[in-house]
Length: 372
Ligand SMILES: [Ca+2]
Ligand SMILES: [Cu+2]
Image 1 (tube, protein in one colour):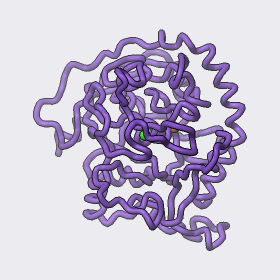
Image 2 (cartoon, helix red, strand yellow):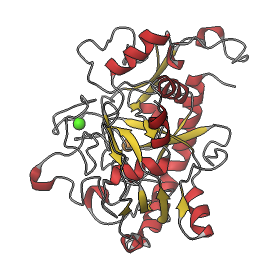
Image 3 (cartoon, protein in one colour):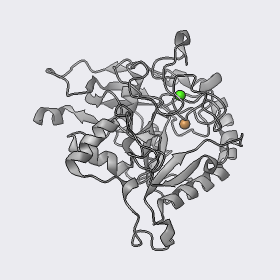
């Protein structure tokens, strides 16, 4: 066991070594994948929908059969979601219908949960000597990982330049003790680790989405599109999601209206009436992360029904870390470094690590709704 800050540093060191090679490998892989859009077949939504009123703040996602994964290749901002080929091959999946929160969980909603339960998030807990026997005492401080812009252009091969472990950073204090969330009731809650998200979901009588549920929902009934709304990044000149403009990681020009996080519902909903399914904040999924999971499903052939993810986590870049899937990308995503606002692309994170661009939303099965 190591301190969360050390985990972060270890991850960064490994990614620094891997990234240059990975980018060149990605160019080769994506060069041969330019025709991958042909792998997508139409989404066949289920016809039956539950009768009665939707649970508060949730929308119905019909489920059905769809093509899951990302076809990368093309031009401009969607040409290369940098060093990621874990979203291939595109494969066929069936999922049951379900209810999904229309937005990421907000500060106000999380506050209600904390007020009702007294829950203390991972970032607020002081790491103990028992958990981290080899860590020096001065490192045993509660905190979380925060993005800080650099003051000059830097090579994009070392995340450590723009991420740091900040003492006292947590959901109430996103940038550390001097910051707060006053007036930000309607912003997505951040600095949420996987157990925090799970605890909230349980309290709310909900659960976290599977990766397949998240992607089916994000696609909004479309198939094989680059973004959750279609193929054009700015249809008719309109900004559709909160991402980064300008030189990364030096200055976010905020041309989309927001330099940094945005209140939920700041951009148009997708075809299912879901907001913020790409950009703004990353969101936890329930599945363990493995880069070869899609290949394993594709090898089996046919249509995978209600996939729950692999049985155990494995990230070759950091074999000892237990990671679950992140989806959607964030306000930091951009076409220079990481374009994970492209629908179907995947993210991942060590389960106890939160950051100031990581939140979540919940879902609910029909069977759970019936008993509530
Ligand atoms: Ca923005
Ligand atoms: Cu990104």
